[in-house]
Length: 496
Image (tube, rainbow, N blue to C red; front, side):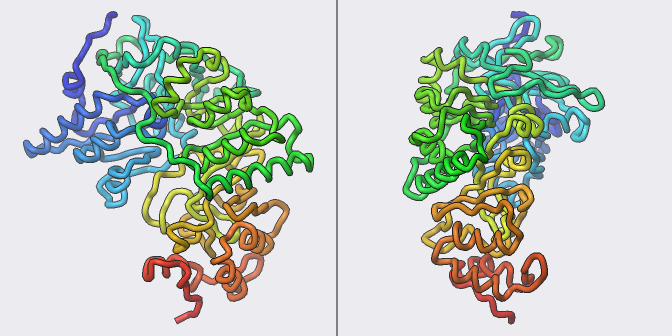
């Protein structure tokens, strides 16, 4: 190997205050594991010496505690984009310590190439291997890595000996040309390949290699399916079966996109258990443990993704079964989430909402409109371009004190113009071919919890207007009651 071999501490010494860093991965698998904590330790030393030390971090999506956690606790992050999911960073963003730019994941790579964010000083990349010519077999998460390798002045490569050689061939690395030279992306079904099994970097840019031995699965366990999420999954499945019976979905079915988490797991479990949903493909941004079961059973014929977001045990199982490897491909997030491909192949999107209002607008990122939860992620990439866009949420939270169906959302990530269906544990609200008032009745009667339906009906009677009925004086009464009383059921629609 022609590259110098560094310790994590030696690699961290290259990082200076104010630098912009790109990290590999998309969710915790595929992220660098040992260099970022060494940078955090350096930040602590610099701060103790009275010197400023903060860096800007760009990723494919969420990372791991070694990046967003360690660097946040070391007060070493100035700016962060485009998505995060860790409590320490969330606190740093919501207190204003960290500047955060919430972006559609499909856009991050190209916007960096366009020059919107300045130059990238260094990329820190986890890999299975790198050749003397600069060909890199990436880990189980691609994200924006190919663009970081192209744009960074210097590159540090973590070679993780826990990454198996069988990773080779699982990737499809394709970077579209930038306008005005861009052409169509040659993907016409989920299993099509457009690029190379490896990423590439100019060997002259590689500062060195850091060797490590770190687990490659998801760090935290998945939340088990419960009665509420199981009912949501069943409602989604019933809706899709009916769509097939009505001829609105082909009998051969269509590709599925599903986010990560317990609701997504419940939906995928329901699809697996259905005798009426035929085997299908997935064109999505992450695959998790429930997808592994679908691949093994044959219910999922093929999965195109950006990341293998498996738990440690599921990751080991996947790599122990080479017969599954021909059923999976990993792509950069600007391809896995690409609106052109999503619309072309007819993806059915399923994403989670924090809250929805009675007209179908969705808040998927900010609690009470002010506190960032995780970010918009890839939900907008898929929702706006889906064959059918579905949003999922439980109808109530916190012992009935919170209704996820409200008169007016406190933050809008997806307008009703992009939302076709809302599914809760109560049922399915189909917003297609309905005017706003009809949508309101549909959502109240089919998606809202019975405890909150009388209040929502009352609001709809009070609200004034034309095409849409809304009263700005009381539209946020649910949220006011939650803030003051801790219970949305105490909403007061009287004007004081």
